[in-house]
Length: 120
Image (cartoon, rainbow, N blue to C red; front, side):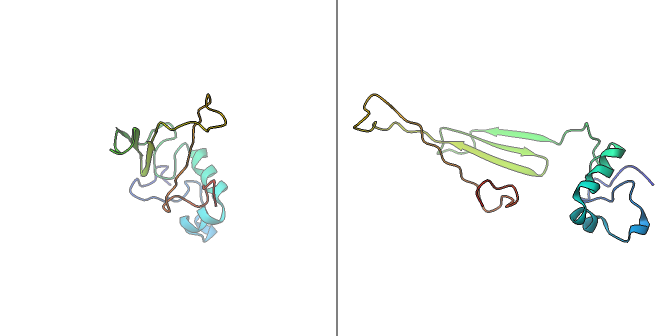
């Protein structure tokens, strides 16, 4: 069996998998995710067909949000990340006129994987 997985397929059959297991690659991946990945790593390739040392294409577009003071759009393979920073000068609290503050917020759209979300 070839150790190269097709690059057009997002889910490949693990190189060392036995055809007698009766599971297709997608089912095997969902039922046994660790074993699925370990089989690829043992062969030195990733499920998408890349070698373990091969990077995905990376694109960076700085200043992509015109209403933010700083922003970037990053594409790493099929993953897209958008980050924006907004800032404003605000008056300090009356009880602490010599102290400023920094506020933060985190927005993650509905397209984010719920399995990875910090806020369920």
